Length: 185
Image 1 (cartoon, one colour):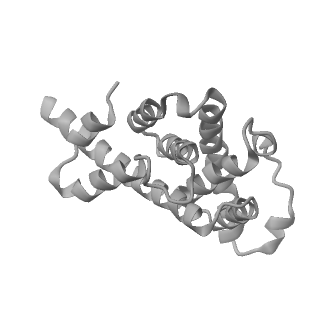
Image 2 (spheres, rainbow, N blue to C red):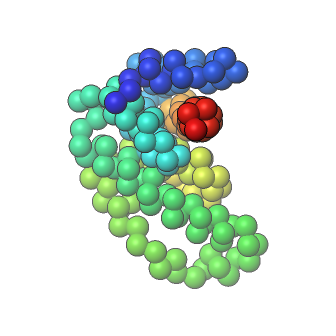
């Protein structure tokens, strides 16, 4: 398993800013308004959401015992359920017919009501994943719950920044991996 320094060493020069931002958001002070566990759980949910097993492993390595099994499971659950919900609710928003919003979703999403961790923290993970997936309806809903739970704008912004950096880093790593595979072939 690669650690953060090994992963960053794979970044080409054109992605220097992404590499620096990755160090910042995964560092102890890179997410103002969030606890270290909240920031790392958010980063894990984002890495899973962008399908980067490499970044997920790095985040879990950094987290060590700062993220217990319940938080790790909740981060993965947030990525999974938001993959479904963001598509569905983005559709109901984009279709432009309010009647769709009145129909029952008929989608199981029990984990949102019982995530195994504090609801606000799960909502924070869900907010970041919804930002990645571009679902305005879900972003607004999760941001409202997070703010009502006492996480300030700075914490919400940190979650969005983590989502942005993890997404960009995953894209760079995928491109580098594709190039490495092409050279090896």
